[in-house]
Length: 180
Image (tube, rainbow, N blue to C red):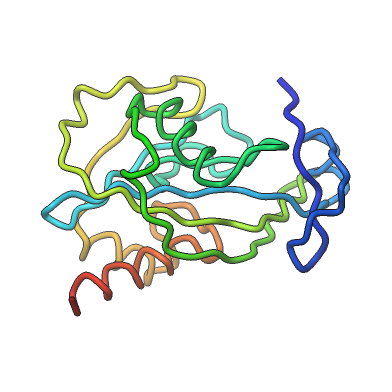
C-alpha cells in the first residue's frame, strides 16, 4: 500500500500538492505524522515493540501508536485510527488530548523522513493482554514505569526509538502531571 500524503513546505504550510509515501521519503518532502502515548493512573506509559519487518527502528520499543497522516485527514483522526489499527484500542475524539508539535528529520539508507509531528496523550487504565496487535507493525506491548522510560531517554534512548522531539514531549507531559 502506497499512501498519499499532503506535502508541506518547511514552515508546515500546505503546498496543495499530494505525493505518494515512497516519493515523499525518496525526495525528503515534508509531511505530517502523529504520535500517541497511552498513560495509566500509575503514570506508566504503554509502549509497543516495533516489528522486525519495520524499515526504521525494527525491534525497538516505541510510543503506544503513531504513523503518517494521509492526505485529507486531520491529525486527531490519524491518532485515533493508528491507535485502533496498531493495538486494537477504539477511542473517539474526547478520549485524546493534544500536547504539542515539533518537526523531525530521520534519514536511514534511502529514506528521508521529514515530519511535522503532532503529539497526543490518552489517559486510560486498560489490560494490555486484551488488545489486538497489528502483527506487521507491532510485535509486543508493555507498560513501562515513568522513571524507567525517562532513564532510557536520558541514556541515549536505551532500547527505545530515537525519534526527535517525541520522547521530550512525554517528559514534559510527566512534568505537567507532577506539578498539577
